[in-house]
Image (cartoon, rainbow, N blue to C red; front, top):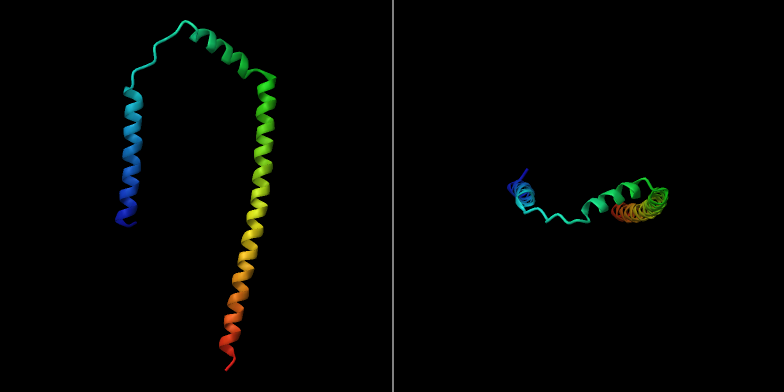
Length: 98
Protein backbone atom coordinates (compact mmCIF):
# COMPACT_ATOMS: atom_id res chain seq x y z
CA UNK A 1 0.00 0.00 0.00
CA UNK A 2 1.20 3.44 -0.86
CA UNK A 3 1.33 6.32 1.56
CA UNK A 4 -1.73 7.93 -0.05
CA UNK A 5 -3.86 4.86 0.57
CA UNK A 6 -2.69 4.67 4.17
CA UNK A 7 -3.37 8.37 4.62
CA UNK A 8 -6.92 8.14 3.23
CA UNK A 9 -7.62 5.06 5.37
CA UNK A 10 -6.33 6.90 8.43
CA UNK A 11 -8.54 9.90 7.65
CA UNK A 12 -11.60 7.66 7.31
CA UNK A 13 -10.92 5.94 10.63
CA UNK A 14 -10.24 9.29 12.33
CA UNK A 15 -13.45 10.82 10.94
CA UNK A 16 -15.48 7.79 12.03
CA UNK A 17 -14.04 8.00 15.54
CA UNK A 18 -14.63 11.73 15.74
CA UNK A 19 -18.26 11.47 14.62
CA UNK A 20 -18.83 8.64 17.09
CA UNK A 21 -17.43 10.80 19.90
CA UNK A 22 -19.63 13.73 18.92
CA UNK A 23 -22.68 11.46 18.81
CA UNK A 24 -21.91 10.02 22.24
CA UNK A 25 -21.21 13.40 23.84
CA UNK A 26 -24.17 15.23 22.31
CA UNK A 27 -26.89 16.18 24.77
CA UNK A 28 -29.91 13.92 24.84
CA UNK A 29 -33.20 15.43 23.66
CA UNK A 30 -35.66 16.53 26.30
CA UNK A 31 -38.28 13.84 27.01
CA UNK A 32 -41.80 14.78 26.10
CA UNK A 33 -45.07 13.53 27.48
CA UNK A 34 -45.95 11.96 24.10
CA UNK A 35 -42.83 9.82 23.87
CA UNK A 36 -44.26 6.71 25.63
CA UNK A 37 -47.33 6.90 23.40
CA UNK A 38 -45.14 7.00 20.28
CA UNK A 39 -43.17 4.00 21.47
CA UNK A 40 -46.37 2.08 22.13
CA UNK A 41 -47.61 2.87 18.63
CA UNK A 42 -44.28 1.78 17.19
CA UNK A 43 -44.76 -1.74 18.57
CA UNK A 44 -48.19 -2.09 17.03
CA UNK A 45 -46.92 -0.70 13.72
CA UNK A 46 -44.15 -3.30 13.61
CA UNK A 47 -46.66 -6.11 14.04
CA UNK A 48 -48.94 -4.69 11.41
CA UNK A 49 -49.65 -6.83 8.38
CA UNK A 50 -49.79 -3.65 6.30
CA UNK A 51 -46.17 -2.86 7.13
CA UNK A 52 -45.10 -6.39 6.29
CA UNK A 53 -46.85 -6.35 2.92
CA UNK A 54 -45.42 -2.91 2.13
CA UNK A 55 -41.91 -4.08 2.96
CA UNK A 56 -42.40 -7.26 0.92
CA UNK A 57 -43.63 -5.26 -2.06
CA UNK A 58 -40.68 -2.88 -1.85
CA UNK A 59 -38.24 -5.77 -1.58
CA UNK A 60 -39.68 -7.43 -4.69
CA UNK A 61 -39.42 -4.13 -6.59
CA UNK A 62 -35.80 -3.78 -5.51
CA UNK A 63 -34.95 -7.33 -6.57
CA UNK A 64 -36.66 -6.89 -9.95
CA UNK A 65 -34.80 -3.64 -10.55
CA UNK A 66 -31.51 -5.27 -9.56
CA UNK A 67 -32.09 -8.14 -11.99
CA UNK A 68 -32.87 -5.74 -14.83
CA UNK A 69 -29.81 -3.64 -14.03
CA UNK A 70 -27.61 -6.75 -13.94
CA UNK A 71 -28.91 -7.90 -17.32
CA UNK A 72 -28.35 -4.49 -18.89
CA UNK A 73 -24.86 -4.28 -17.39
CA UNK A 74 -23.99 -7.75 -18.69
CA UNK A 75 -25.18 -6.77 -22.18
CA UNK A 76 -23.12 -3.58 -22.08
CA UNK A 77 -20.00 -5.41 -20.89
CA UNK A 78 -20.47 -8.09 -23.54
CA UNK A 79 -20.76 -5.53 -26.36
CA UNK A 80 -17.70 -3.62 -25.11
CA UNK A 81 -15.69 -6.83 -24.89
CA UNK A 82 -16.78 -7.81 -28.40
CA UNK A 83 -15.78 -4.38 -29.71
CA UNK A 84 -12.40 -4.62 -27.98
CA UNK A 85 -11.80 -8.13 -29.35
CA UNK A 86 -12.79 -7.01 -32.84
CA UNK A 87 -10.46 -4.01 -32.78
CA UNK A 88 -7.64 -6.14 -31.41
CA UNK A 89 -8.21 -8.71 -34.18
CA UNK A 90 -8.05 -5.91 -36.79
CA UNK A 91 -4.75 -4.71 -35.32
CA UNK A 92 -3.31 -8.25 -35.40
CA UNK A 93 -4.45 -8.70 -39.02
CA UNK A 94 -2.88 -5.37 -39.93
CA UNK A 95 0.48 -6.42 -38.50
CA UNK A 96 0.46 -9.78 -40.29
CA UNK A 97 0.10 -8.23 -43.74
CA UNK A 98 3.40 -6.95 -45.19
